[in-house]
Image (cartoon, rainbow over all chains, first blue to last red; front, side):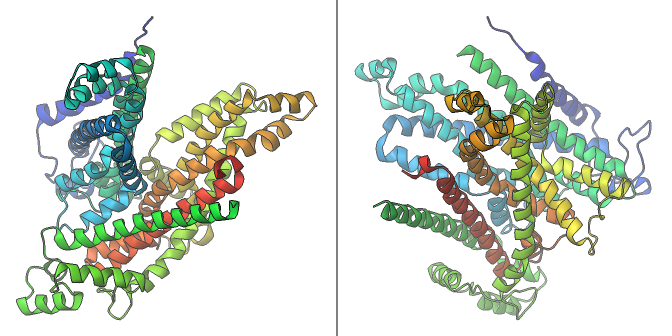
Length: 265
Length: 313
């Protein structure tokens, strides 16, 4: 019996709908400043109030969340595709190639991503969102590759893979036609975790001042909040709650994915 | 025989750690030199004259061919001498790092200690019989903390405790002293404690079915004796693995908290060096952070081998 638990995907879906509704439907520039309104509290027209130099917090939070989600989706998908392909093909090959892949995973995973980001971004004059994305991509593939490799190890002994090989399929065909579809489930579970990690990482970088220059990021929103903690606590609340909503909904969704896949197996 | 094995493993682990460190250092080196953007122009700004830029390039050794720069960089690493700080001329980069290491080590060290104790305590409470039904709530609380990013709750908790309740010193208060350190490391310890509690609970539940606990129980041992004296040492291997795995996150969290509380330390040094384009200090501080990370992980590995003989084979 399959019991569906769509509730776990609901927060993420709601968040995506709301945020893209504001970004595409309402319009308005998140970077536009209303200097006279600096740090003013929420009102009936502007539900979330204003922040440093009169930034409309509602717009800023929506745009920042939207961009964080897009970045997270891109990085997670990149990691998923490259990591799965790499893990599956080297796992099927076995031997030294497999050991080297594992060693590379060790190397990448043992680096704190934050340190890596700091090192790479320090060389760029003005780190843009692309740079940040590239830095996350450098390390995003490793957990996927490790998972895919572990799954492939069990799959490569199975009879359908042996049969495909005996029938003379090319190794490309064996990997993508027979192995990859069978390991997608367990590996896909990592997607939500990876996306949440990217959101947190991007926020941390923005918070310490390595965010994109336009200031439209959850990190700089949070930084505004801590700077104005004494005079305008609502800014801090908006920043912290946005980060909580994004990472929480991603984690819930990945938990739901995990449950669904485990039931399917 | 066993001694030789241990020595060989330690040596292998040390070499591996050095390899990781060298890769990190090389990455910083290459990133600072190969990515578009002349570091000399970044430091001096666009308005500087060509002669000034050339002088700075000469001083930093940027006019040499890349392989010679790299050799000098590695040689400098080995001698712990990457040149003087650009922001504070006459101060060697590594002495800046040395000064920053203390506060960060104190922060991270206190956090590891608090996190391990808190997490183990929570794990014991969530499996032991002491709380009755309340243990489910301990577990739920742990899951909630584990799912909440430090970055989001640290400023909120600071606001409530420092601004509203005035229990702890305000961020940036230079006279915060020990209570500031304890508060910051307590925040840093929370996510670690949650992870430790999660894994510790799973490991303890794994042990719960073991016969030796039944025997201990049948012989009339108290729950304290059964769980803490018998089960906990066996469950400590996964716990030390989690602590080691969390060290990277801990370093990142330390950077964030140093920024939030305006505390001195390796993170602040790195960020200031980044802002000032102080290349020698930046290189030295990233390498030092990597070294700290690698040492801590190796120490966790050795500790794990010492606690659990099964890992030694």
